[in-house]
Length: 205
Image (cartoon, rainbow, N blue to C red):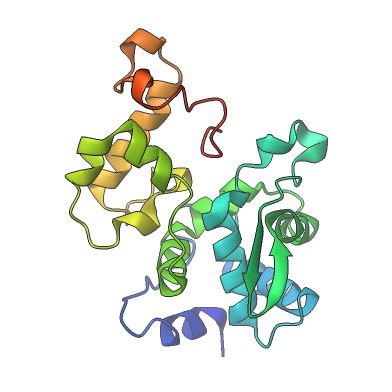
């Protein structure tokens, strides 16, 4: 059974896109299946789909923010711990397996290619996007006005150009990105209320 079929079978309440590579052709289904197999084996998991879920959860937690480690040589040094099936895992470990298997790709490229699946799989585990706190604090009214029932699971910066991400969330993610590069007095939020989050929050990449 292919990974695509397993994903569809494991999301009984959600419609999963038929095309895994929805945003870029830089990674194929076969490549992701291979990475998922390697991750599953490395952590002693039971199936390829569990390996895929670990990859999704790692990115949802902020594992895409590889610059946090500083420099290209340390691009897999983001080290956010989490548990899956009783196993202790870090995003750095997951990134290492991805980069070793797909050396010509960046972690963020993989996340963008599988953005929809990351949101869907993460929702099954109750893992909300790593930008949720920041969006709530920077844009409280705008975020509160978004009524999409699954909005918390799309709160990750790699979703900003995903056509399957709700439009209001995409727009807010783009606004956040634009604000980062504006002078402080031109940004769309009041820094007095958020203690200058940019520069120290995990979402600041």
